[in-house]
Picture 1: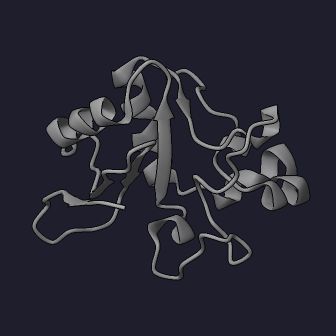
Picture 2 (picture 1 turned 45 degrees about the horizontal axis):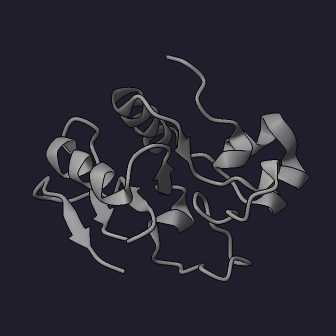
Length: 135
């Protein structure tokens, strides 16, 4: 599978600055990341998670540490189990519909219907159903 993501897209700037290209991967959930790559491959369009490395404003759309203004100890982001995605060329609602239709294929457990991005996470659900929630 192609390498669609640089590690800085998945972790916040403080982690990336401290640990660099190689060791920052220690803060990436292998299970969630593997399925994120599969979703990206299926959609066939670039995903934007964090873009601070390229001068963009997004820093907390992957793993979140306690110094994040969006940190919550119960958030899937806090255990590197969630990503907020902007998909190049698709409205968030279009990607959300793809996730609703194919969540089992990508083992997605949670979907947030945010107006400007698509939150996906790999929470464990006893029923295997998709948990859908709004901002």
